[in-house]
Image 1 (cartoon, rainbow, N blue to C red):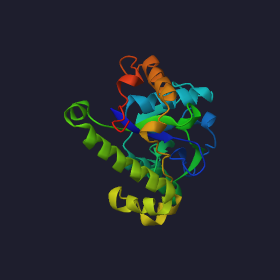
Image 2 (image 1 turned 120 degrees about the horizontal axis):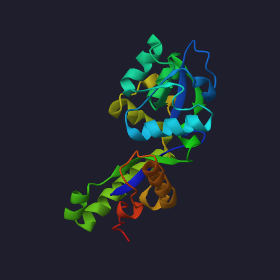
Image 3 (image 1 turned 45 degrees about the vertical axis):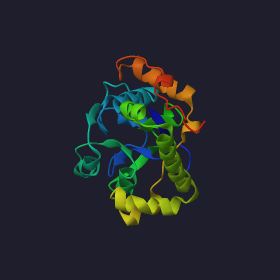
Image 4 (image 1 turned 90 degrees about the vertical axis):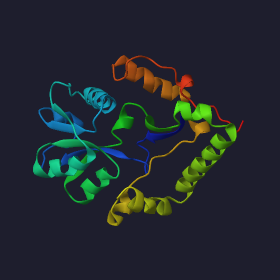
Length: 221
């Protein structure tokens, strides 16, 4: 059951993904990726989003080579010239740019297809939800939402935890952006349903699903 969302946005200060071209490349815009090697995070969702966004910018999916690649390999592959561009997420995106291995040609890449796309979210397993009482779930939600509010109101201090828990280098912290996390009551279910329908239409998931079947019922109400 979903209880929080990490939208991917093109809002200043909350851009957490970029299409990055390798240093020395002649690529300056998405339409110049024809004939290039483009990498992204593994999985059908990222692949479909990359296809659809590039098609929107006049780049057919058969006009470039698409590769699935783990985040740890993005920077070395750009540096070695094994790929020409990477659809990269934070904090790797900022590190690639700060290390002068690549440069952003399109910040907020995923949001170009759908504003604040709910590409990532936080879930409670259905069986766990069934066996826990409302008090436990309510306490869990309170703690999680307290962390979200802390991150909103104290971004610099919140980013510092990335060093310990996400292995982010201290020298790039100031430039790393945080997702504009949404609490349970803030989840846009209409937009989330549009996201699900898009994935179903393009076979990134097996069938259409109803967000109402997966949205956690708030035990505090």
